[in-house]
Amino acid sequence: MRLADATWTDVRDADVDVAFVPVGSTEQHGPHAPLGTDTLDAVAVAEAGAAAYEAARAGEDAGADAAGEVAVAPPIPVGVAEEHRAFDGTMWVSPDAFRAYVREAAASLPHHGIDRVVFVNGHGGNVEALAEVARRFSRDPDHDGYAVTFTWFDAVGDHAGDMGHAGPLETALLRATNPDLVREDRVATASEGAADRWGEWVSGVNLAHDSDAFTANGVVGDLTDGDAERGAELLDLASEALADLAAAVVERDLE
Image (cartoon, rainbow, N blue to C red; front, side):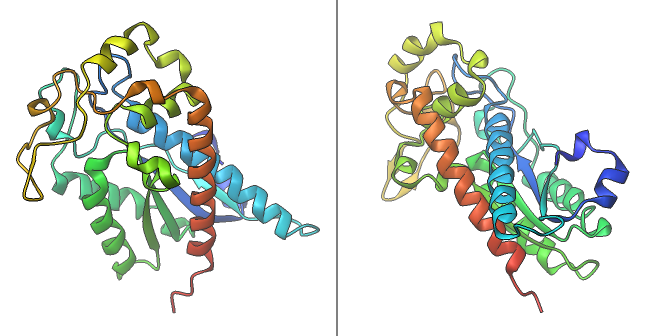
């Protein structure tokens, strides 16, 4: 159930087990992919994960009047992304503002009895802040809610090592879910100008605070490995992992 498409009576009458809150970013993704890539990918994984969870529950509860649903919240489209500030169109907020907004938005849900939350993240820059949000949400004395964070590109098995930025994984998932938004005529040029890895590393330390220090066009990774077939596999892997996580979150005893 998409919360934004539902009425309040739909939510009141639903049997909601858990909410997925997609969290992305509005930032450069090279010349070939849209600024909203992280948000689009997070939404795609959240919706596919919700479908996988509900299908599994329906199978387990065959014969029951209703199986638990997932409420997919509207996405949070601006995140911690100042590292991409040199590239036009990028938006960002401070980590403090991001943590406060995400936590307070999610805290609306326990008020309606939806007390289990998974933040479905699509942007690496959000990871540290979201981990703290989940902890604080779970410890909040004003409600009985519990939250965890799921970053889709960390849950795709051996593919995870090819993540990069605006690289093969993000481009592949876009080609599978939002193909009209990939500027295919720019992919070859984007790939030619891509950096091999994220950052400038010495003694285990990244010397580059901003992405333009090591990638002139914003891309990191080999785009030739990012076709739609791979994207479909990534979506399957991530959504199944998310469904498994949701089941564990729902079953967790918080007493």
